[in-house]
Structure formats: structure tokens, C-alpha cells
Length: 293
Image 1 (cartoon, rainbow, N blue to C red):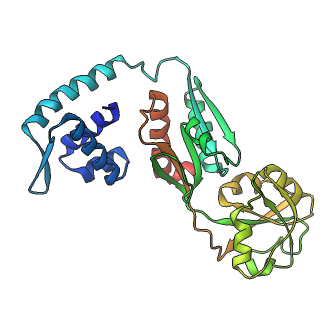
Image 2: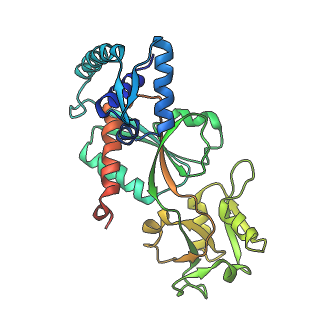
Image 3: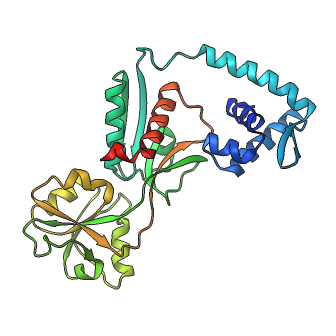
């Protein structure tokens, strides 16, 4: 029996609905239902029965709910308040850099200076590494070795980065076909796999001329700014790179990579007060569009 199962059970009982509870808990309905089924199997008795489209507690469920609420109350009363001056640490891994999320971390830390962020930016090629982080920023097609919750941070779109002296630097937009004769710079991980933009060039009918590859996005930017090649950057980089007078950032139209940028965090791990406060802050900020103006 896990603490999260008790929280899930209490939430369903409160809402009398798996759908509403899943929305409140921000997890999928199948994951929530599966967790309750495992709890019922462990207890050896049903906790709910369906009546008039509602999830109604059985007699044993009512007894178990009273016990569950006492346990949860005891745990909540034992927690240190996040508003205290106790230091806290949150680890975040970036599979893909995203300026919007990075700004959220900075703003949260200004509000709560006792929070320390440990930030990792790499290709995250080793599967075992994922479990080391509280939160992960990555593509919507990221495969993780454990059940996760997901939150959309930003729809995926791309910009073409060209040197400021490039013949295309003044364009308002570009298509992939207009770049087929250019020299490119790409991200390439430790296993030799190129970033998705390379594959999109191939799917568009040409093999890009790669004159420079690196596993570090800063080096990619540095090479482009020297005037030696063009490259692609996710829209999340735009607020940071548009400030440079050495490159021009031009929207790429017709890009086939529809993998959105998501925030991931483990389903079966109870968040600390600091982690929960940060998650709540992120959700509220993403809902408030003016926060990014």
C-alpha cells in the first residue's frame, strides 16, 4: 500500500467520479483506476460501486475512508511548511532547452530564495538517469522507463538561425526547401543520432550538408554566429537568441516535427512541499499568458 494510493482513493471518494478526480490530480484515468484496483486487491474488498454514474463508497469503503483521512491528516500535520526558511532542492533535467520554463525557475527562485535548483542539460541518453530528477523538460515523444504525469509547456515550432550577414537574414519566414543548398550545423548525441531537424530535411527530399556537429547547443549557436553555417532551433530558444546581433532567427514554416515540449514528473512519487509549490506555480503561470509578455 502506498501513500499516493490513499490520496487517490480519498480524491475519488470526495468527487464521486474517477474523471473529476483524475483532472484534479492531473493524472490519466487509466492510471488512477489501475491504482485503485491494486489497492482493492491488496485490501481484499471493494471500495466503490457504481450507482447512477457516480462512484459510491461501499460500507467497507466508508470505513476505510475515515481511516485514510486520519492518516493523511497526520502526515500533513507532520510536514514542515514550505513557507519556512528551511532550504529545499529541486532537480530539473532539460532534454531540450526551453526559455519559457527556464524563466519560470528563475522567477520562482526570486520568490523563494531558499530553493536551490539543480539543472542538468544534456542529451540524457542513459535511460537510468531519468529517475534521478524531480522534473524533466522534453519532447512529447520522450520515452521514460516509469509512469509519469505530463503538462504541456509549449507547442513545438522551429526557427532557422542564419548569420546576420546571410542572404536570407531579412526574410520573415523560410521553408525547408529554400535551405537545401545550405551548409548546416546539427546537434548529435553520444550514440551518433542527429536531432530531429536532420531527419526532417531527409523527409523533405534532400540530405543536408552537415559541416559541423556537436552535442552542445551553445556550440551550435557559436558556429552559426561565426557565419559558417545555418541551423535550426526550437522556439523555446527564441527569446534568448533573438537578442544576438550576430544571427537572425527566422520562423520555419511547414516543419513536420509536431513533438510539443512537455513537463514530466513521476506518478508514483510523493512531491515534497517545495516541489508541489513549484509545480503549482508552473501550472498557474502557464495558464496566465500575460506572465510571458
